[in-house]
Length: 167
Image 1: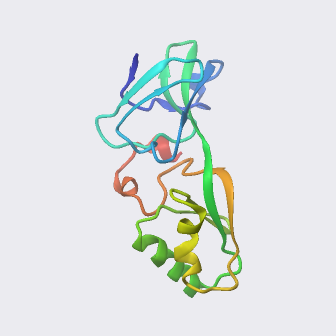
Image 2: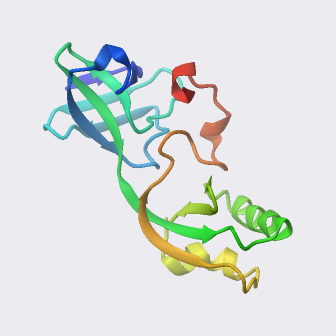
């Protein structure tokens, strides 16, 4: 088993140009774990053992043998999508409070709020529907979540990450 202890950079860094990429599929819920056991797309067993919290972002290089790099890839997962283009600032505050009160991770992208579905569709949407807003559109889709950084509402956001994570 290959042991990985740190993130080496991004797959598009000049140091990794021309290398064969072997993807390591990581869910958003596993991306902040310090220790993780997984398998690469080519079947190599990998043990991830970070000494401090880190974020396995999409495109992170976790191993380079000079020919091949192991690259983190985010798996699409079921998320609740809340269209935010029609909500007022007060509604946005109430939605944030409803999600934060349950420690629900969320991401804001352009005019959408993404929330991972960790239970059923109904249970995930319940705090939003309970607000009684009639102008809010909620749908469910398969999307990669927390691709580049920890989502809002997670303890992982409080940790300091290496500068190349935010490049």
